[in-house]
Image 1 (tube, rainbow, N blue to C red):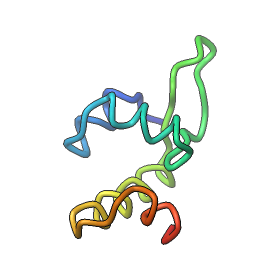
Image 2: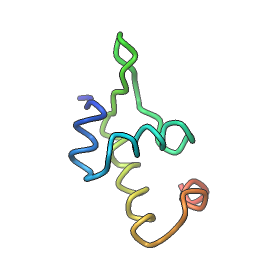
Image 3: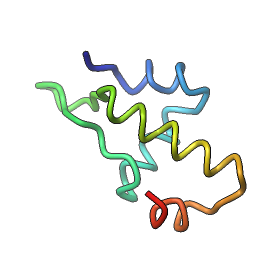
Image 4: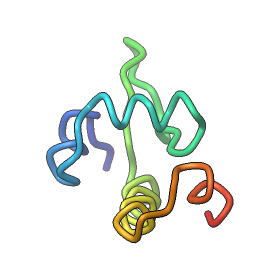
Length: 69
């Protein structure tokens, strides 16, 4: 199953802009794109986002999170 960027933002308690930023810096690339080019996230992407948010909660900057993952 795949999820829209808005759904994932709601699940994770982050903004859509945050997810767009993570995509732009290569930290969390969506697993697919819709025919219209919209980001679509799968379960593996949600797992990665969970790990990203865990490290962010611990205070790691995004550059270090990227290295850890």
